Length: 297
Ligand SMILES: NC(=O)c1ccc[n+]([C@@H]2O[C@H](COP(=O)([O-])OP(=O)(O)OC[C@H]3O[C@@H](n4cnc5c(N)ncnc54)[C@H](OP(=O)(O)O)[C@@H]3O)[C@@H](O)[C@H]2O)c1
Image (cartoon, rainbow, N blue to C red; front, side, top):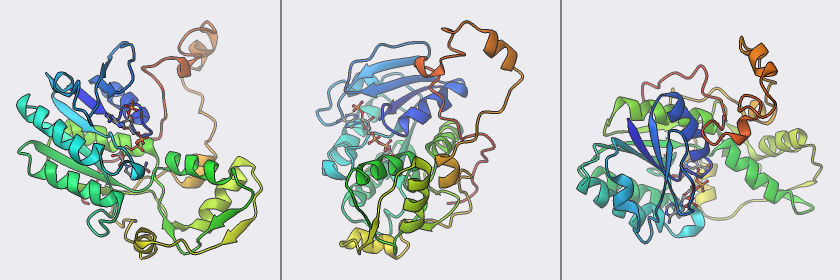
C-alpha cells in the first residue's frame, strides 16, 4: 500500500515510518520542512493549518496515518481545523481509510487538548471516510523528554497521586501498522503500557537510569486535567497492552547477536549495516517484536 503519514517527523512518526517500511509499504511523509525523498520514503511539503500542499499529499494514497498535532499548546489548530482540511482533501481524493492517533481518556475527560482530540475523532467519524482511531497512553519517549526539561531546574516537583502508564512508541507504531494493513474498522482501540505507576516511581526510575541527582519536592498539581488523571481516567485496563516497561525502555538490553553478526561486523565501516542512524529509511526504534494484535479496546 501507499500510505501518507502526517506528523512523520514527530515522536511516533519516527517509529511508524520504519514499521511501515518493514511491512513492505510505500510511505509518503508530510512535513512543513522541505526534505529530500529517498528509497521508499517520499517526503512532501504540506501544512495542515493553511491547507497548502494537502490535496497533492493525499492524491493516490491507499490510507492515511494522521499523527500530526500542534500539541497541548497549539489550541487544537492542527487537530481540529487541520483534520477537517485533511478530511476534505481525502474525501475528494477518495482515500478509503484514515487512521487517527488519539489519547486514552478523551471520551472520559475531554479537557483542554483532549477536547480537541475528541472533536477530531468526531469529525473523522462523520466524514464518510473509512476510519480507525488508536488511543494511546503517554509515550515513554515523550515522558523522557519532559523529564529532561523538568530536571533542568535544581528541584523536581512531584505529585505522587498521579498514575502513569507509559507506552513505547515502537509498540504503538506496530499496532498502527497492523491496523492500517487490516483496513477501516470504524472503531476506537485503546492501547497502554504494561504497568501503571505513580509519579514518584516514574521519576525515581528515570533519575536512576539517567544518572541524575535531584531532590523531589512533593506537591499537588492543580487543574481539572490532573484531577482526571488522578482519578485514573487517562490510563486503560484494555486487555491489549505493550510489553516494554518504563524500566526496560530506560535500560535497553544490548542487542542480541544475530545470524548476520559476522556480515555486519565485516561490512565496511561506512556501510548502513554499521551506521543505521545515518540511513534515513532504517532508523530503527525497535520494540515491536513479539507484538500481538489486540482483540478489544
Ligand atoms: N506524545 C504522547 O505521549 C502521545 C500519547 C498519546 C497519543 N499521542 C498522539 O500521537 C500523535 C503523535 O504525537 P507525537 O508526540 O509523535 O507528536 P510530536 O512529536 O509533537 O510531532 C508533531 C508532528 O506534527 C507535525 N505538525 C505540527 N504542525 C503541523 C502542521 N501545521 N501541518 C502539518 N504537520 C504539522 C509536525 O511535523 P513538522 O514539524 O515536520 O511539520 C510533527 O511531525 C498525536 O496525534 C498525539 O496526539 C501522543
